[in-house]
Image 1 (tube, rainbow, N blue to C red):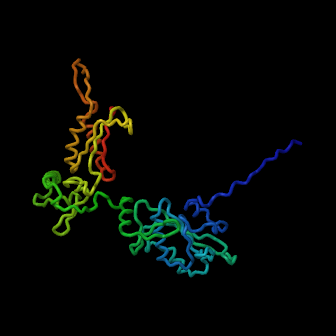
Image 2 (cartoon, rainbow, N blue to C red; image 1 turned 60 degrees about the vertical axis):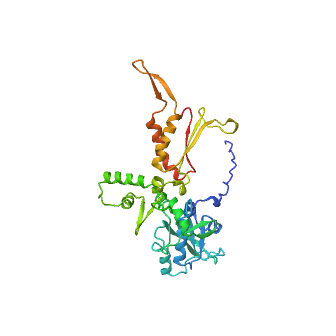
Image 3 (tube, one colour; image 1 turned 90 degrees about the vertical axis):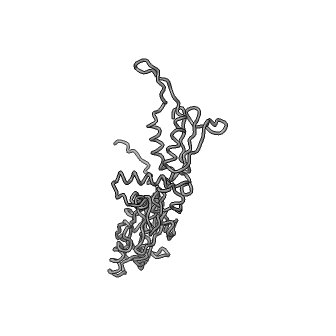
Length: 341
C-alpha cells in the first residue's frame, strides 16, 4: 500500500473586521459577528425606538462623510444590547424604511438581518447602507447637514456647508460674490471695451447698461440699483484682483540649465512679478517671456540664415493663458523657464 502523506493544515488567520469597508459589513453582517461591531467611523447603532427624523440625520451624516459613507444598525441599544426589532409595530417599521421625504438626497439601501436577541430569542435588526455622495451636500428636509468625526455626529454650520458645496462642485468658486466696491475699484475702461465686444458678438440690445451686460455674461448680479461683481469679474476687471484673489499674479522665473536648483546651487538668473487684472497681466507678461526665450540661427532650404525663437510664441503664450485659472487656487501662478523651457 502506498505511503500516505500528511499535510499540516493551518486554519486561516481570523480576519480583522476593523478593516472591513461599509460595503463588506453590509454584505457579511450576521448573527455571529454583529456584536463585534461597535460605533466607529463606519457604524452607527440605534435602538428600535429611534424616530424617523433622528434616523434621517444619520442618513445626512453618512452621505457627507468620506470616503465610503457608513452603516446604521437599528435594533441595538446604546449599551450594545441586542434588543432586536420584532416587537416594533409594523407601521413604525414601515416609517423607518420610508425616509426619502426626510432626507431626499441620500442614497441608501436597507435589509433585515436575522439575529438572536439578548434573551436568546429569534429576532432581526434593520441594516442601512448609506453611500457617500461626492457630488452633493446632503441635508435633511429641515435644512440641517451633518458629518461623522470618529464615533460622533457633528452638525455643520452654514459656512462649512458652503465650503462643502464648493468642494463638491455644487457652487462654482469663481461665481462667488466679492466685497470690492463697484465701480470705484474696477477699470471702467476695460469694462466698456468688454461690453462693446459682448454687444457686437451677442447682438444684444444697444440700450442695455454695462451692468446688465455683465450680468448676462455671468460676471455678477444686479441687486436693486447696485451691481454685485463676482470673483471672475474681479479677476478680469478689478484694479487689484489680489485684494480678493491673492494668487492673481504671474511670476516669471528664468533658470540657467535644464532644471530648477536650490540652496548653494540656486540657478535662477531672472525673476519678476506681473500683477494687474487678467487682460493687462497677459498683455504685460508677453514681452517679458519673449525676451527670455532663446533664439537660434537656422539655415533655410534656400541656404539663407534665419533667426527664429526656440519655441513659437503661439505655443508658450497659449500655455500661459490656459494656466491662468490656477491663480484662483494656487498661491501664485508661476512660469518657469529653463534652457529646454
